[in-house]
Amino acid sequence: MPELPEVETVVSILNKNARNKKIVSIDVVYPKLIKTEISLEDFKKRVSNKIINEVNRIGKYIIFDIGVDVLISHLRMEGKWYYINNLELINQKHIELIFYLDNDYMLVYHDTRKFGTINLEEKQFYKFKEPIKKLGPEPFVKEVNGLYFSNAMSKSNKYIKTVLLDQTKISGIGNIYADEILFDSKIHPENKANNLSIDNYICIYNSSKKILKRAIELGGSTISTYKAGHGISGKFQNELKVHLRKGENCFNCSNKIFKIKVNGRGTYYCEYCQIKY
Ligand SMILES: [Zn+2]
Image 1 (spheres, helix red, strand yellow):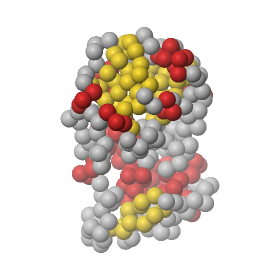
Image 2 (cartoon, rainbow, N blue to C red):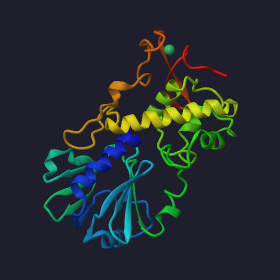
Image 3 (spheres, protein in one colour):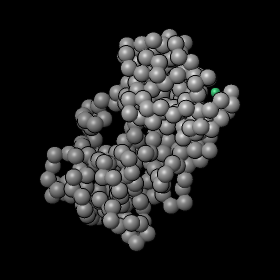
Image 4 (cartoon, protein in one colour):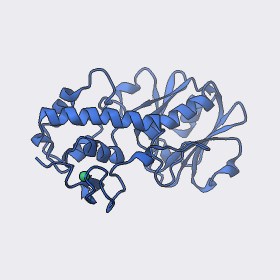
């Protein structure tokens, strides 16, 4: 599943390739992809002949600025955007939408699991509407610090791993990075969030910033088949300290890494390095 650093990579590739290109026509192969309540005809009308001014990211949402409106894309499990000039380069069975651009290239949305979504909203209002309005801030923004983490999370009696994944509190932390952040901050994933101290939250905040920044620098973690574009793959998977390392030796203490389920999510941790309070 693409996480924030992977989405950041996708956004920079889309900006490089599709920015300032005009969408001349649209083929919606899988209409259920579009979550805004709008007819297909209206969708096409509002998107056709618009220039992609810029592509941005809010949390794990990709925002295409097309003038009056924005297209909001979430890749969920397996969604991918391809910038190609020949459909035969990809598996056509899972194509859900094609934007034909004015340079004979296509921007193709492809999704083997069909969980991805696209919304079309007015640029003026989209930040105050679903799905963007409920997102918490990212760890990098100015007003966020250890105290902010503590205020946002420490009232919950859920496990800290679960609370870190709650995008309404802090956005951008997915399953891989939650494991890495808790390993880095030496905190057991099954601590109750309301059992952790302000010092614990300062550690979690510092680790969140450090790990996400490093992952973005390296283009994310390419796990399974995720591919941001042709020839692009993330390198952060080479730096994962616990995630997917079940039974391997901890880099700190040489004991074996454990795998458990926390609220249904596969969770990797070191029993010795990560403290349960
Ligand atoms: Zn260890």
